[in-house]
Image (tube, rainbow, N blue to C red; front, side, top):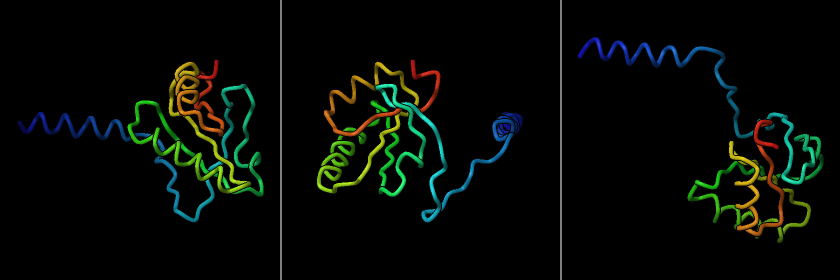
Length: 119
């Protein structure tokens, strides 16, 4: 039993190698990133949204909370002129992302999070 515990702890330590993730606080600016929307339009965040309030929504179609939240975000966006929304998908392929966004029928764009998923 003791040997199994040592092996498990060694596995956790091995998985923790490398740089720790950046710690962000509520008042910190979101990190800059570049992505591509489903229509191929490049997005350079935050430069593309300068001077506008932005809602960044990270999501996946398997998330049971994403669909109702994304519809609610669209309702808020419609009520507040000038509010920008960017829904960044978490690791799914373009076909899946496109199908989900069409199903939702929201009026804001979706973007892909990784270059390998953009084709």
